[in-house]
Length: 102
Length: 170
Image (cartoon, rainbow over all chains, first blue to last red; front, side):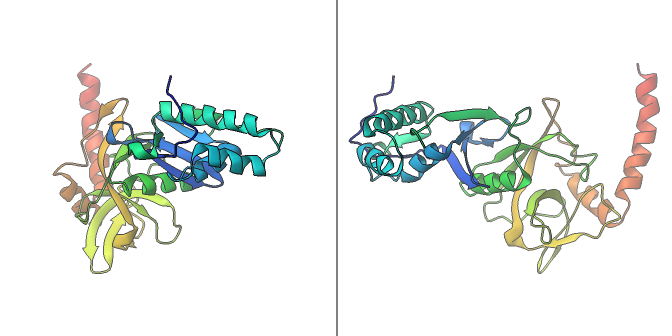
């Protein structure tokens, strides 16, 4: 399982193209050097989209979780776990990389 | 909102229950090509028949500072509708390319500015196989015939000649 560090900053991988279109964030993996609509695409829900927008390679996951906790009515510990879970999934799918690892 | 719901949902396009709109395909095509990477998607419509048919999967490659030549099939932003269109370059003008669908001879060609030409079609797949006809050296003849208004009559004539041969060869 991919180890996620909450004190680290993450940034979208160069192997994806993400575009917000008609209010929806769509992520196209550039598998084998092609952006392929016949392959799998990904979309994030509203909160995931909010998280994605904050992944700037500078803010740590802790800082992002704190920011989200201020905005959403959920216990900070729960938000932190959700952030960790989504980032882990996105890293596993090679859509995110740790900023220092670029 | 009760909790930060951060699930991601993968979905497939094609037989998906979340089909992409034309604007979405255009936005993604622009995003992918701007990274210098080809873009593969399923074409719709019959304006490029018989060389590209409804449901064919096409690969659009970046132009890389190389303007498309006569005969090439290109993806472009239509000057009036601002929609993504895939048609053939049948001529060049100072202001841009004259572009028209192979199956749209009765219609006036569109004059498209170079900045609206997004990429060139470099591969057509039909039924899982590559279809090269229409993208090779014959593309110049196709563009010439299209401009002369002779492409469709030629294609119809060819299909009449080929059909009986196919039947008798079974």
